[in-house]
Image 1 (cartoon, helix red, strand yellow):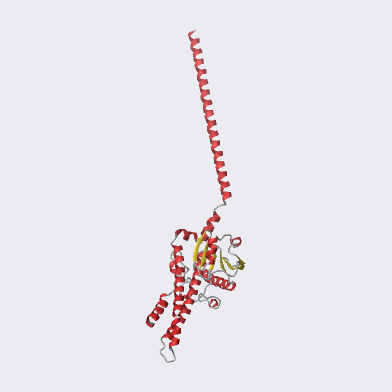
Image 2: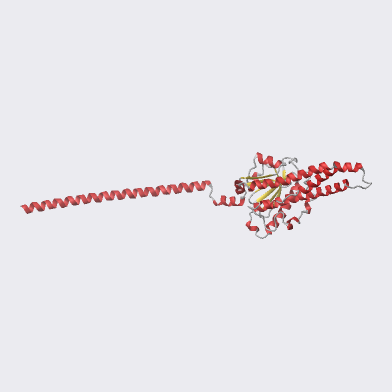
Length: 331
């Protein structure tokens, strides 16, 4: 029935409300006044993204060839765009992506995976590798990767200028900027679908003679594709929230996400070779001290035995003298 279909479309539109992930970061709170979901932040909708990016048909793989476009953004503000393959990026980043990591980045499934020394993320249009001092955005479309990277840079700069920004490490601010951007793009897609559904509902409820049955039938045929698009958008928004929630509820992954802290700890510990040599030297010194103590104890024992022997000889001499004195007295 026409009424049931219209109610289904309206219910789907009201049901789909992408939620910003800031409420999940209770254990790693976002920056005050600059996080995703804040009114001032939501007004900053990137107009440059509209002609370049579209979430209606996201790229599901890197089909342009083995070499990908890379946008590298460092914590000190340096930006380096270059071409590379996923398997050869380790020469520049210092971390090696496993075959599973490469497959995850080539798929269309949202991912937020903590690895030793880095975080792998795929939030739709924004995907790449996050380290303690840089973030690397990758993709097959050079212009799209550059646009995404520059938008992340702008948002990261805004977060860095916020009050108390120095309290938050680089990786936390990057994740906030990337998530904020991803939900902004989802919201833009929702707004486009909202306009299409409103136009469709107007056409279906138009009772004027100019609105023929054929036009109503054509409009009715568009309900199913719009419903599919709404469901897809809802699934992607929910999945982005779920993968962040999964990391925050896992103590090991949450600890592994503290990349800056782990890097500082790694730098404060001496290399394995130096630590081993120091331990060996300490052991040798302790052994030498123990040996010297043992020698000293042995010398003391020998000295004590010599003293006892001398006391014995002195006693014998005194006994002999007393015997001679007694013999002389008797005579």
